Image 1: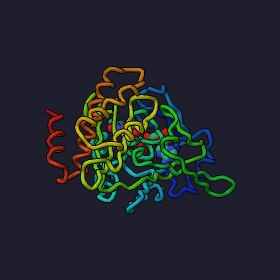
Image 2: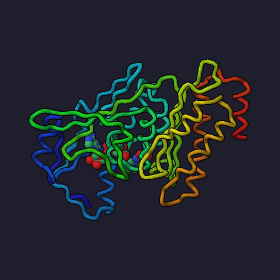
Image 3: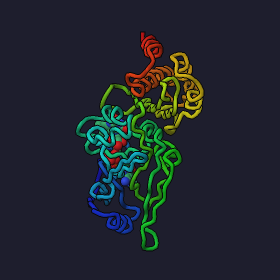
Image 4: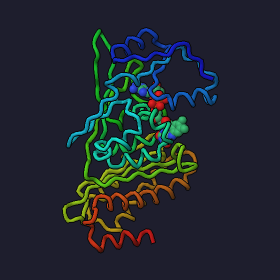
Length: 308
Ligand SMILES: Cc1cc2nc3c(=O)[nH]c(=O)nc-3n(C[C@H](O)[C@H](O)[C@H](O)COP(=O)(O)OP(=O)(O)OC[C@H]3O[C@@H](n4cnc5c(N)ncnc54)[C@H](O)[C@@H]3O)c2cc1C
């Protein structure tokens, strides 16, 4: 059971930091509370007493969303649902709509925030691999010596282990900034015990850009969750794919590469099978999405044959 005496809803960073200072050691930050409440209510943590909950979801700066041709800035309290219904975000982050559509259900998606997903730092948090593939950096802020100080940390360095990050106790995650990749082909694969309302066992984000002739990769970005303590980029596979033509045979070779990285303590054989299958399907879907109608007939036929 969760016991809480006070629920504060600051409407600015100043107010939030004042509340955090006032209740130091006795408070917990929440945004959508979709991780915190089940954790506390389902007894996983026993009876939990948190004297003060500080809900940061009413702070306007944490809802800012901007996408220009090069960069995207997402307030930490952006609900997952926005990746489905904000066309500018969906275009700039091509793997995110597919990630969002399989994320929980309509009701949870409206409350669950991208910042909460990141700070929760689950090895298989669905929002993390797509943002890693976009080279995301997180913007953290704290109030120190009377003023608000900010720092930026690459997402790949921010998450240090299952449930752990480099967030200091007096800091908030304010925003995420990442590359805008409109025009890339994106795909997202996920599996859990069932298809929806489920925490992933493995999830994979793929983003690709083809060269003008549609025969080689201009850029390939891959990130995977659920195969080890933290989500990670698949840099060796990215450089392998970047150095040759796009063929079904090379995609199949690439799909086998991350299998050896599976280091989870449970379901290792299952995860290896899943990784290979997800890689192949994710790459093919992303190549098709990037190529549109411009894929050469030979390549289109070869990709189709992989599924046969
Ligand atoms: C039924 C159900 C289905 C779910 N399905 C999925 C799924 O498909 N995929 C998936 O990845 N997750 C899923 N989840 C987990 C959860 O919804 C997500 O991780 C969600 O993104 C968490 O966001 P939140 O705003 O609710 O976080 P909260 O629960 O509010 O917070 C999570 C953690 O982040 C901290 N935090 C939040 N915001 C900030 C901030 N701005 N600064 C500093 N710290 C902060 C909190 O202190 C807490 O430690 C599911 C949960 C439920 C209950």
